[in-house]
Image 1 (cartoon, rainbow over the protein chains, first blue to last red):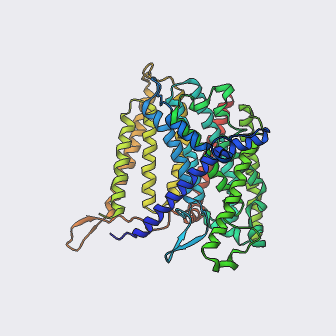
Image 2: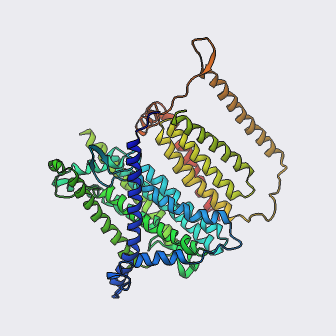
Image 3: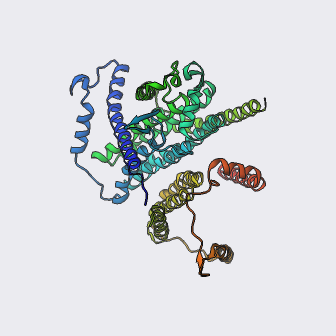
Length: 353
Length: 177
């Protein structure tokens, strides 16, 4: 057997780093959600734990861990526990194909800041996203509670409906890139003028981006599409029977999903780790510092999208369920189809010229 | 054993055990979950064959969409109250016999075909051909697209018409009430 153990170690470290970073970011998303909510509602938000309430997520996590864990008698024990596990797993798995930065050099080794550069990266994201709904469905059903089941069914039908629009909006983008690898898509965008800025896909696919953004909100069950957890209709939604850290996992999975979808939007439409107005290829001698510049650029873009998620949550009220379905099937899908056909025609026309 | 071989046997075992559990589970929800495990194992086999596109599409379409709808239906069914009424209709039995027979036919054909997968070694013994893993690029999206839209374009278009008619049918049935 001939195994490149250093490669195994490298990938292992990379996976550990990516997972840790996702978890930490998800933790501080809860903090920033409270702070932004406070800002928008003219309050001060958490201030007690640490400076600016920065230790609030730790306190919250400790609280969730210390709470009593209750499994309802009539619940299906195994599936009840499997539900949050699946939700968490699906949320973490997406990060495998995302390029978080360029290449760094560690001890003479070129290390790509990406766990796996597979040639079907975008499809992989879709597969994992479509599996994410199982966590909610299984958890909701296994609770053996009518409200949970209703919420689970809502979540599943919402996710399936919006996946269609999401996929169609991405197909138009893939027509232009001609590659499904996330790294290729980023590299192509970096080659644009103005230090990559004119290569950003959002300039060529504004409608596609808008549809993708709306679908991403729906996939993450964020307001205005948070019908699966509509308190006033369903008590608390699919995680009503959950307590302690199992509830924490569901809530956490939502924040990780938000982070990951922000990264995906930044990667596919906003040039990923491309710093705009800055020509990366002219500064190749910067080495690892160049990769750092890329990571900072990606972090800023992701931060903006996370802020957008929260901004919308505290601004727009929830849709009614029939409005949600109408928007998904009768508006977004036809729009995405039209966008796809037009993009296809333009790409063909440009190829012929 | 090489790593590929270990993975192969692991995936095969997983697929078989899960497939048997689909049949043996008393609870239909458990059956669906075992079936999802089968799809994962099969996708793993596709990846071993270097057919990443097929692997991921198998997951998106079957595990991600069709099985969700299965779960949907099963979760809404009133479970465990009464056994399903057995249908004694002559037509259903005939239909069952015909579809079971066609499945048998296909399987026999496959096994006969696989007779071509043996070769003679130096000592003139019949040995199975070595399975090739992680080679070939027919399963990659680019090659597959080229083949589908050149060599197999007619069957491809016909099957898309079939899908379209199924969609129209679903809409018509849904609109009835």
